[in-house]
Image 1 (cartoon, helix red, strand yellow):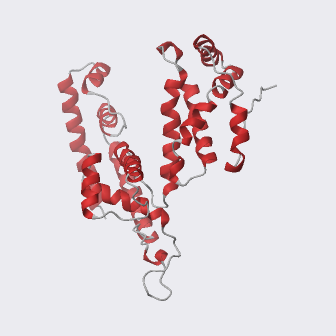
Image 2 (tube, one colour):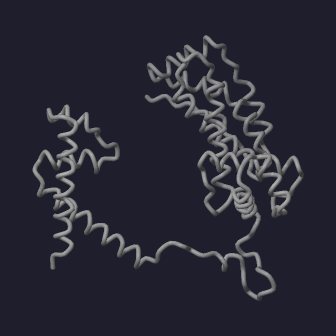
Image 3 (tube, rainbow, N blue to C red):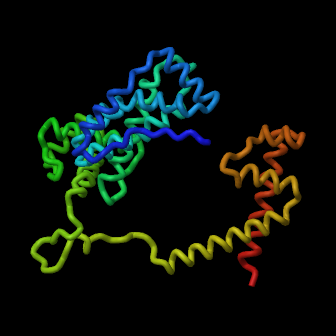
Length: 290
């Protein structure tokens, strides 16, 4: 029978004290025990070993999650997301590298929690590239230090000073601050003195309408069909070279193809250029055909 092991369930915030007392009962592992358990899980898939690695680090997740309490989200949710990050860390941990699991897991735990905060912060999708993440959390921390309200816009002089302190362009900082403020605006909030006008009435969907989407989809299908029909007219070697060089997500190099076909790098380049010329001509003829 398969082995089923459970973790303590993170309760709503009102019951967190009981949860914290429970996870503090799990012993902290020695370096040798941690290494042995990590090897047993990785090499033999022992679930008991993984369970011990996870439970011994639940208090680390709780500590990190508490550092993100100021974002208006339930602490229980932050801990749950952090636990997911911890389990990913255990799965990918390589004990031979010489560092402890806690050192490695901190990154995964923080990443899981910050991703959750960014996704939950606003219905407007927040950018998730590293620079935007850094700006989001740096701005939040500095505003807390200066006791600037989260739902307040920044005066120009203050925006300039904060941008200089964080080291980002002023317009990026202002844009991020306004996106952070968006969380505090209700969709049904009235706009000005206009009767019946709500905030949601000012939101614009900039996506193409269904008719345009359908037309673009049809056009894409026709182009794809024409491309493969034109490819079929090429000699096999030229077709394969063109496919490997232009249609693969990870294109092959001229050197690799030269070794495969027993020709020089320059010869492969010539064959590719010739095949492209034939392909363009064939597709042009298809486009002008009645």
